[in-house]
Amino acid sequence: MTDQTNDRAAIEAVLAPIAAGRATVRVEGGRASIILDVTGLPDGAQNALETDIRAAAAIPGIDEVRVARTAQRVNRRLIAVASGKGGVGKSTVSANLAIALARAGRKVGLVDADIYGPSQPKLMGVEGRKPVAHDKKLVPLATAYGVPMLSMGGLVEEGQAIAWRGPMAAGALTQLVDANWGAADTLVLDLPPGTGDVQLTMIQKHRPAGAVIVSTPQDLALIDATRAIDLFAKAGIPVIGIVENMAGYACPHCGEVSDPFGKGGAEAAAERLGVPFLGRIPLDIAIRTASDVGSPPAAGNGVEGAAFAEVAGKVNAWLDTQKG
Image 1 (cartoon, rainbow, N blue to C red):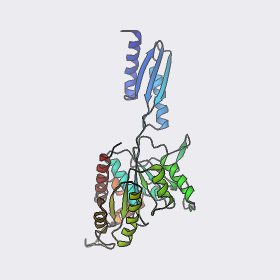
Image 2 (image 1 turned 90 degrees about the vertical axis):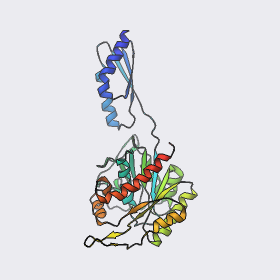
Image 3 (image 1 turned 180 degrees about the horizontal axis):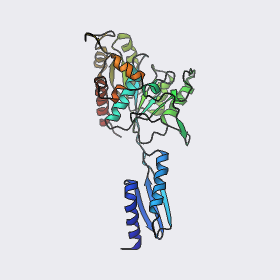
């Protein structure tokens, strides 16, 4: 066995507990060349790991340590969460869907693409925090739920009106989507209501893998939801399914269930349009109060999060059937 082989084995031994399988070692003379796989690591963690590896590899007989970083390309898929009109709970569904997918094992990021009415900072408990940029790319905010997030709400002053024309809004969407998402392989996009400039930019430039449509059971909301479905269909983007939100209200005193927004309309519309029905989210004050304090129900194990987990399970199953 040569000295170089011994040196390589010695370096590999000291790096094993540090690099966790990320380092490949080559030794030539007194030089150690190390290929370091930094896939999914933020910049700070990459720098710290390289520093530790350089120090550990400087064993007797090694005069020079060279480290080259490499990263695998993450094949990232976008899931658009859309609605034909506002006020149907699309943002609440987006936040809880992202969290439930992460709990199911997906590496998920959340984009608050509702440029004019960003609400994800409040829903995800990161109000007042501002993202930073590195190498001209935004770095998503970490949240308590394992879902990194970016929102226009983090780029403007709280309460400030965002009075932007189409091109400016479209440019903002691109900054959010093209950020440094690290290992996240699935981005949930909370889109503005309707079928305007942001939706068209997203379809043309970022090409989501599929769309989830949110509607209440009432007829007016379903008419607008049908328009949103038509937009994606014309663009050749699969509609993963429809979520019926605010479906049924259980009185906290007597337990009687009423249907202030109607019942079963979204499921019937899904059948008529030939798209899957993903499930119902009840009109529950516990969901509203938890959302207001930045504690999405999907992050817990209560009954309020079960409906979101069911929807996420169907979206997760759909993702598993897709290539890439």
